Length: 405
Image (cartoon, rainbow, N blue to C red; front, side, top):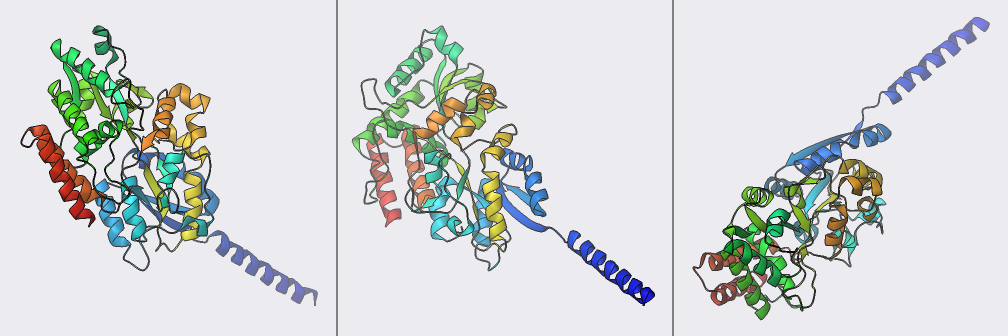
């Protein structure tokens, strides 16, 4: 009996050990993220290991160019089970993606709103905008800033302009001294629209009224575009690379730009400030900085929604954002921007937070890409002098109203 019992016990022990080996050897789950390439991927790679270890999951991050990312995500959304569990989206895509049901509603995945997120950034992830359900969280808190060469301005006794009248006056002084006063980014489509709208907003302009009728040909639009053309006359029309190099090296005085263009590892190649909020010194201040967050959400056709929701909470947490900031990440949480150790290293953080808190989102319509194309074509025609300001803006209004119908 003792021998038989010993054999049975030995068999049971072997079975238990074998079963334990099967459990511990269980293949990890997998999450696939379709992301905007570059520093976004680098930032996520710097923290993902902790989540992989805790949840026994492998995380694959696919870094793609913006146009390729949008196309792949849109096509994959048509599949019953998607290839991607989480996706990044440029914030102007949000209305289009939300109406196409590309994102899963986050409340159903236990992902909650957090008051620590900068309010303007958090609003971008809701559908309808600001007031609706949450479908994405802000991953990268980009916002336009005003960049200038302080040494060049100081040489003419010019203080940092606080209004667009002052920008134009300063640019004129630089031009009169033989320099390049102001650089626009006047290429058709997104470049010129992104460059012009902050000026337009400062003049009190709005692309649409409450009925989604175009208002680009308003008096504000005409004054803003005349100012924009006058700024060009003091300087040049460059693409991104030349904008950065010319202002950084003192060959040009001022331009608008995104922080990532000028600021690397906390060091900026030019001085910076929030975009001037007034048309004139005595005018009314308006929100002018264009917000350009990259959002992240769980796909509606993911086979791993719950786990993907947990990763979304993890990757956008303050702890993760503090680490990612050291690897090119751009925070979306107020506590991260205000962290004393980080703001000592990344001196632009307080300015960038201020700009975010006074930022403007591009109109929340799924047709924005077409509107932007139409408006950009007419702005470029005005800048090139092939159309008058009045004719260009009238044509833009007509084209935009046709798109919105």
